[in-house]
Amino acid sequence: MPAIDLHTHSTASDGTFTPAELVKAAKEAGLVAIALTDHDTMDGLPEALEAGVKHGIEVIPGCELSVRSKTGVLHIVGLWVDPYSETLKRAFNEVRNRRISRNEGMVANLQKLGIDITMEEIRTEAPGTVGRPHMARILVAKKVVKNFEEAFNDYLGSNGKAYIPKNNISPEEAFELLKSTNATSILAHPFLLSSDEEVLDREVAKLKNYGLEGIEVYYNSHSIEMTGICKRLARKYDLMPSGGSDFHGFVKPDIMIGKGTGNLFVHHSVLDDLKSFRQSKGLKI
Image 1 (tube, rainbow, N blue to C red):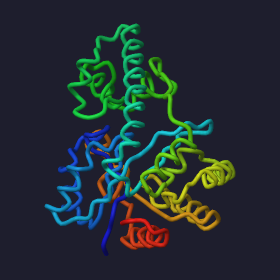
Image 2 (cartoon, rainbow, N blue to C red; image 1 turned 180 degrees about the vertical axis):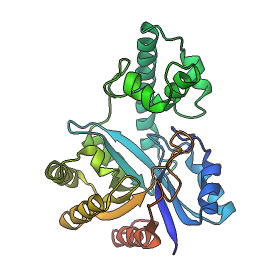
Image 3 (tube, rainbow, N blue to C red; image 1 turned 90 degrees about the vertical axis):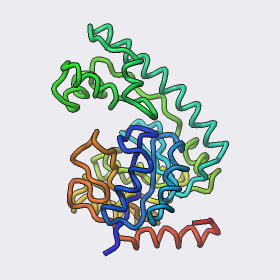
Image 4 (tube, rainbow, N blue to C red; image 1 turned 135 degrees about the horizontal axis):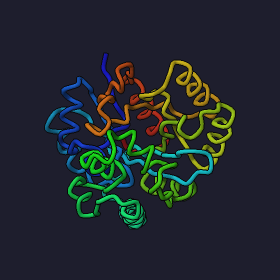
C-alpha cells in the first residue's frame, strides 16, 4: 500500500539529513510522497523539490511554525507553502533573529554554569538553523552529559538550568502568515499541546476559529486511543486529517522516516483528501 510522510525535517532546521538526502531516504523507504516541514524556514524547499523530480517522489513544500501558547507546545505545519513567499521570508527572518538571541542567552547560561561551550562550536554542528539539539550534541561530545535526554533534562529543556523560553509568534500571526501564501494549516503533534482531552478539545476549537484546517491524526507517538481522539476532533471541528513521523534523522535515531518508531503508517488517501480539500477552495496542489 502506498505510504506518505507529511512531517519531516532537514539540515535547513534541526534535522541531520540534507533536503536531497531526506527525499532520497523517503524514496528508498518506499514512500510515494513527502512534505518537508522545517522549523520556521523554507530554505531547504528548492533543493527538496529538485530532488523529488530526480527520484520520482512527490514533494509537498511546507514549514512548521512555533506558536505562542499558554497550554503547551503549539506547532502549526503549513502544507503547500510558496517557497518564494517574501511575506514568509520576512517573518522567518524575524523569527531567526529572535532564535539567535535566545541561543546566545542559553550559551551564556551554560558558560555561567562552568561549561566550556561557545556559539562558534555550535555553529559547526548546524549547517542550517542553530537549535538546542546542536547544543545537546556538544554537551554529549564533551561528556558533560551522557545523552540527549540528560542534556535536555538537566540543561536545555523547559526545566533545565540554562533554559530560556521561546519568543514565538501569536496564533493569529501564524494563521495570517500561512493564509498569505495559500498554505493549508495543520495542528502538529496535538498531544504536545495538551494531554488532557477536554483541554485539547477547547484549544482545537480556538485554533479552528483562527483558521486551523487540519490536525495530525497519525503521528509517531500516538497510541490507538490518541489516534481515535484526534479522529473525533477532526470530525467535530471539520478538520482534515494529516500525519507524519516528525523525522529528524540521527538526532532522533528511534524515529524512522515514514514509520516513526515502527508502527506509523499514513496512507496516500490522506494526501488525496487534502488535495481534494484544496481544490474545493480553488487552491493549487
